[in-house]
Length: 213
Image (cartoon, rainbow, N blue to C red):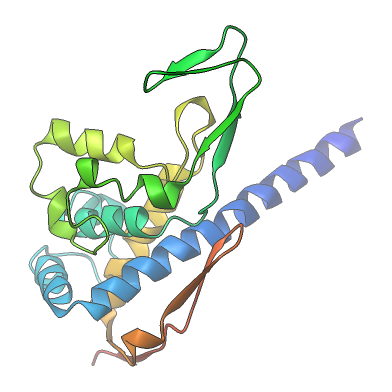
């Protein structure tokens, strides 16, 4: 029994690491690509990082956690390219439910596609199809919270991704490290392509990277 319990702990730990690797990698790649592909974003972010008196070469999470423009870039990356772009399905419980004036009987399978939900123009603005981190800085704290809750990238409700905050921590740690310590330049933004399967796959992201002196 004890040996079985030990195997279970190992399996759960391994599953937790593997479960977040592709999803965090997708958000990381999306955010980096769009920062490099939009010079005004790159300039604003580098100015914020350079003026924040961060520890080098590895900024502490406590130092970068609340940087407003970094936060805006990460949230925009999470919104623009969710790792999963197929419907997150749920089954209507006993008694049915009314959604937008339409009655759905018990047993109906319903779902929302994060890619579509995250581009809802009435929520995120008429430019919801485009990268613009500034949208997250134009809101007061209450409205910003509503925007965050409107995204379906990490799911919603009781089934929300348990690793959400760990994933955001990883992205917020790595991006400042890269831009503080390396010069990076995207080679050909038009070569970047996406393909939707279960994971929303990306390819064609090529860049040069050189360590700062």
